[in-house]
Image 1 (cartoon, helix red, strand yellow):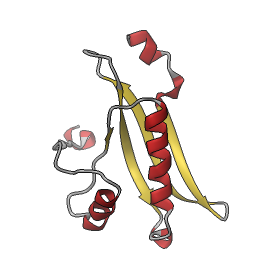
Image 2 (tube, one colour):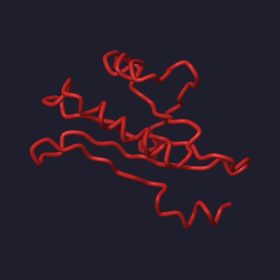
Image 3 (cartoon, helix red, strand yellow):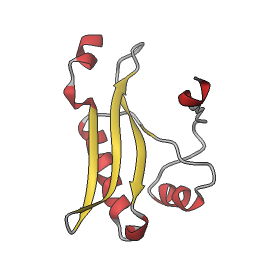
Length: 115
């Protein structure tokens, strides 16, 4: 199982959205396996973002459509990401896409502040 994960170059994707050749949105997609059961991978997203000037134009919706296509292609069991606690507009958007913020609780620590 470890070799399967270690040798798989498709476990990381960096997606960008462009508008007239300019990058206006992005996300990092990481797929990983639970090493104890190894049945299905899960997907973690890092920093889903859209340039403020280009919000409410369907860019994030298209990014999430592609994210979900990749998840299905790779038989990911779930898609997981965090959002800042007070980012209510984003929370509403994620919920409209079918995401639930009540399944898990994220724990975050700034590694640089402990040095």
